[in-house]
Length: 229
Ligand code: HEC
Image (cartoon, rainbow, N blue to C red):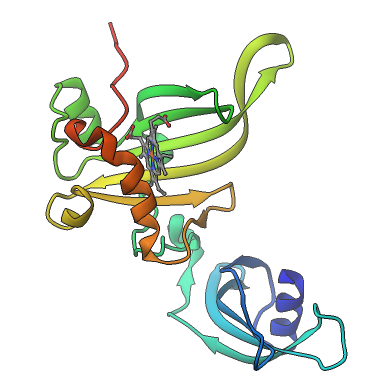
């Protein structure tokens, strides 16, 4: 499907390079129209454009055959050299925090029920709060990131569990006023190395918030900063 979108957009003279990201399509059985709320494509070497795409089922053909009936340019075309501008925001509008791969560690964790390794990282404000023990509540401006990998074992030392496939990166952004509805935390998650935003719409945060509610007395945070010398 994604390749077909690309080819059709290219035929319309809209693109010359790569497909970046598409939101899940919905199919209207009455009109036989397939609607994709957003497709992001690389227009030129360094430009990205977002389009809304509607396709019409070709009568009598296989269900997978659509012709593009409408392409609407969405927001303004942005340059990719701003790093994270390629990554679409979460459905609640939160954008991928800049520079999170350079943040420092709060603690690692290992889940044995789904066999994943995690590191919990903090931005400067979060690390400072963690080292000073001022984490209940965490200060406004603190951001916690959790990066998750599937368990793998080290080829050269099978007893060692090491990070395999990258699962997702997720964030809790502290702003007591802005996110008062969800305990003062803004939640967002991006899936896989493609960094696809998690959630169909903004209500995905209820899933996050609900599961973090048991640790309400710890400012909705599970992680205890790891002991350091
Ligand atoms: C099924 C329960 C559950 C759900 C749903 C859930 N979390 Fe968590 N989350 C946890 C647990 C348990 C931890 C701590 C252990 C771990 O995973 O390392 C955690 C840890 C975190 C952390 C590190 C800070 C902390 O609290 O320890 C972040 C950031 C985070 N989650 C974000 C999210 C986001 C964003 C969502 C929704 C997209 C979400 N979580 C949904 C259970 C959940």
